[in-house]
Length: 291
Image (cartoon, rainbow, N blue to C red; front, side):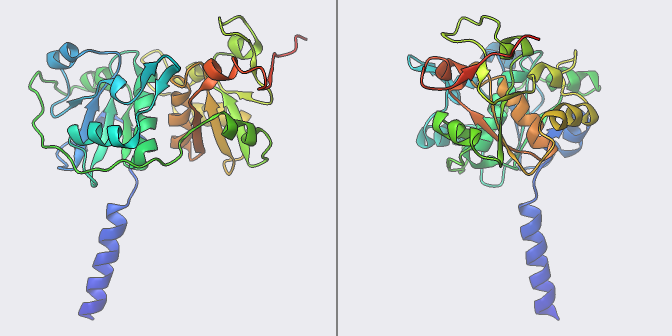
């Protein structure tokens, strides 16, 4: 009997340790879980260290987006290799058992969503949550902020590549696979073919359109689930399908990635997006036909 009880406790502990966090959490949820010793809050966005130093949620650690998504002559939003990513994550105190909450400021929702996706890409899927409304929602809910820097030790997490970020060849294959849908996250006008400054305008041939701004409200929060379900289900009604999202450079599409994950879709992000695709004449593009 004792052996059976010990076995059951081991199974329960295993299931508990592998339980996935909610993808999108409220300030109330964060406040209820903030004393969890495994919780790591990452404050990020188009902010500089001085913004973090001025005010942040107690215990938050500053994540400069360029550490995990940087520009180089070949293009924008490149993810580091696993060695560099491991150093960044360990320097932030992230451990194998860490539970991460990404917090943004103001309208920085797209870059924070990119950080959410990148953390999942490097092996933290199911262990990352997005604070809906960011620090403004936290303060509006009546919770305090501080200027006190967080104290923490280096972590032991080792990054791995999980395949969340995909390339143009993956997209080409997805276009010809019934089990996948390619989705353009840009506003409809860009999808339809309005000039963007890229070599070619329009969208990837066969791609559908779920504009990322439709997911966000005036308070820079993700909209209610009923609205999100309608936005996604109208275009991709079958949740068994994989959804590959893209945009201009692989940033705003991450809002769709975040929302899709919260709704139970299998999501990928085409990192090169239109910056790469529009420059390769061999890759198919089209404009929406005018009625």
